[in-house]
Image (cartoon, rainbow, N blue to C red; front, side):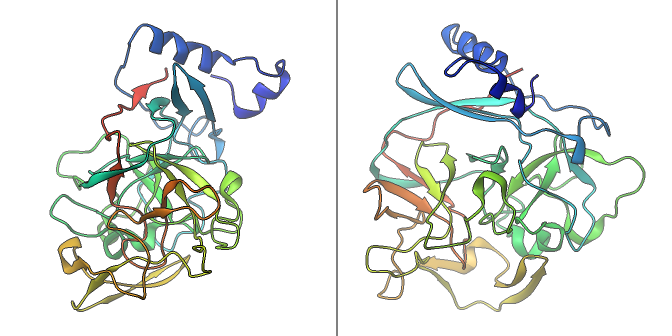
Length: 308
């Protein structure tokens, strides 16, 4: 499969071999399961080459990526992660212009959206019991607030797919992993998402599974920071990551959506983007940090399919 740079040698507007293959899968209504490379120093980790393409086809926004971010990753985390990013080629067909729907639905574990960096978005959870990723996995997050989940979940491993926090140290050969973010892409060198940590830029950083665009830190039309309305009275834990220090409760059930004058986002961390005028999701500095619900009016049933 071609690395990102190879596409630049083609004629403007032409398709590379990955896009051509994906279009053929769409035409044939083919959606195979995504597979990941077995760990190898030559294709994984710092040797891995990022890929991200976005195009309109059959009145859908098609995104193709390989789960490899286009920025430095997994080198500055405070705690070793047994998993290392390896390619997993995928595509998804999304609604082009979804509006806000009548009700929100919860996101699930695993990939819930794709970032323009080539990485993926996970939600706030570490496990299906409601345990939060940040207090359980925070020290293993790099400065972009990303890390890799096992490409194939080992028996007895955390169902959420994330590394199990303090319980493992990498020994021997790393495990092939799926690189993903649990919060805003905060690092100073964030590849295509550089500037996501600047609310004055209000940078588009990807799309969720319902087609709604997701932005980094932003301000509303009055200049107020896009702010989560989730609140808690639970005891908070101080979580130290290389990206900063956070205060977090233990589970998602510790938080309640409680709108007031001090916040401006709905329960999906959504609002009308003041620049585009479109319903959008926003990353936040407080819980849930990343949007945790789907609110698009065309549903979240789009499938992630293999681009191999």
